[in-house]
Amino acid sequence: MLSKYGGSMLSHVKLASNRERPRLAIIAHDGKKADLVAFATFNRSRLQEYDIVATGATGDLLRDKVGLDVERVTAGPHGGDVQIASRVVEGDIDAVLFMVDPLDKHPHDPDIQTLLRICNVCNIPLATNIATADVLISSPLLLEFRAAAS
Image 1 (cartoon, rainbow, N blue to C red):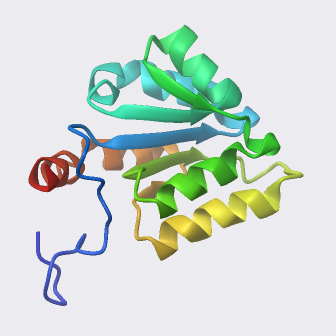
Image 2: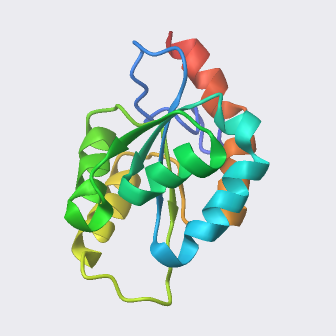
Image 3: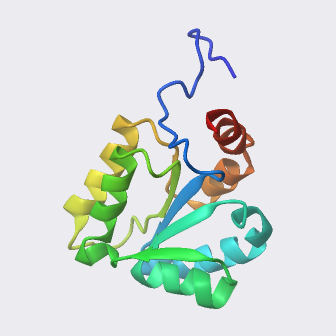
């Protein structure tokens, strides 16, 4: 898909070509975990099209409550957000769903801001709420670009 500025809208998105399926990172703050489980349950078949990486308890919930295969990294406050950011930089993550609770304080806010900034620097699709997550996983672009990169 071409943007109005010429060239592909996702020309700077790095896709690791050694994978068949796009890799999706999923993170949810405690106040948004129930919303994420409802979202993931409703979208289970679509999410099964992705390799999923998730932080701590979010990964446990996606595996135990939703029945998804999940690669689990450390909990966000213990460095999981930074682990995901590092994988974004390495080109190992194709999109991020980060269900942010904007009404709560987070002691690891610098790590959260790092991940958000890295997604923007690396031009990685980033959803921070359920509405945007719906649009992101409904887009055929991630699957189409994955096929083109293979």
